[in-house]
Length: 287
Image 1 (cartoon, one colour):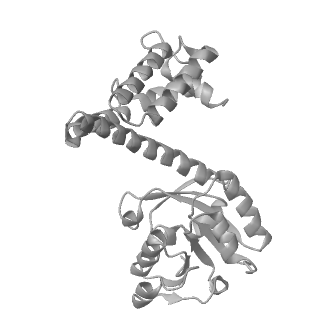
Image 2 (cartoon, helix red, strand yellow):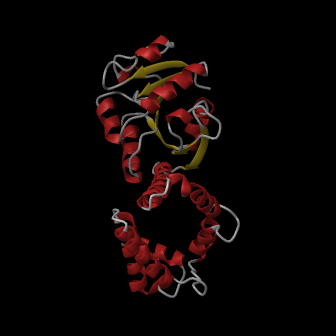
Image 3 (cartoon, one colour):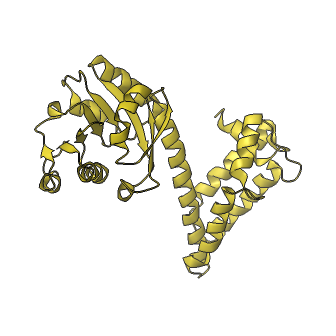
């Protein structure tokens, strides 16, 4: 197991990771592009590097995007180093980055952290990882100090594909609750009025009952069959128009409902009106 870890990037996430490594008994070196952020970690026992060139074998990167990694390691010999980049970007950027690191003698492991900074080191937190499985296995026990390790494949872009898909569901789900809450307030109701029903809806979608649409749709997507006898897409498209009118009548911003209305209408126009809601995925595949 690796005992020396270098953490590059000391924002909220990077600082939480460095502190967690220290608490797990690792020797920790830290570096940040903007000086002055290492003081608290140094007081806990970390060593502040003068440059990324001082990094050890295992380097955990937590920066705003992959360009930041290029800027930080420009001109640095990466021979023998394993860069575990937990920054956000697109899958194609991660694939390019793997080649960039390899050309400089190193190996890139990519990751997408599925927890906010307070969740680092806590039970239930996990991170999607992709890249060479043998290299990840060599450092897995060390990385488990941060979160559980969930390996999704050798393609370095896969970690971010999984991460961004989850982030979309996270943001869109919470944004829909923001819209529902604004609608409640427009009628003079407290937001807490909506909360139990939102919890029921989100929980039901992930469950096994008749509202368990995640499992239902996943099966339809794999079969590419979208039964619409009981609830066809044409009905859903008309319903989305009613949702838009409701928000407009309340004097609220209709951006998200309008986007869904237009997506549903396009799917109907493409011939999916008699099929079920799941058929919208076919329109998503051909923008």
